[in-house]
Image (cartoon, rainbow, N blue to C red):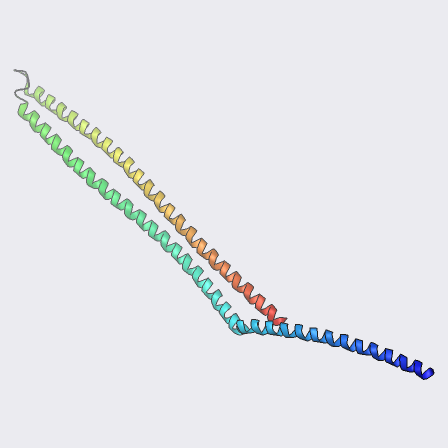
Length: 217
């Protein structure tokens, strides 16, 4: 009876041990499968990645290129400003030349008008005065007519000069406004390119950190 109880007890313990061993083996099998999956994923990530030294080297080169590109953008901006200034000066110079040329032509026309008026007055002087008028009176009238003609011509020249100055100022204003708009557009374009380059650099650094974290895990 006693041996029967001992035998039954041993069978129960053996069954419990067998169940425990089976449970433990199942856990180890699942752990092995999970470990194999992680190893496979890690190996794939490792195959797709580059060595840390090469990544660091590429990132360093990228940073150097970013600095050089920024310097190029700054030099480009300075060159644009200088070009704009030169274009402005060239435009002003051309406008002044046109103004001087126009004034010279107007002056020549005015001189011709004045000479024609003087010649006409001198030619018509004897027939256009009353008989018996003294020569001094004739000369006085002649001088007054010439003076009046010159005053009229001077007034016309002043009016023409003011009009040309106003036109020149308007042209310079339009030219300056167009140049300023072009500079603003170019600066906006350069800022956009620099922002895009900065974003690309940040993404590259983020990718580098993610790869390092995966390698560390």
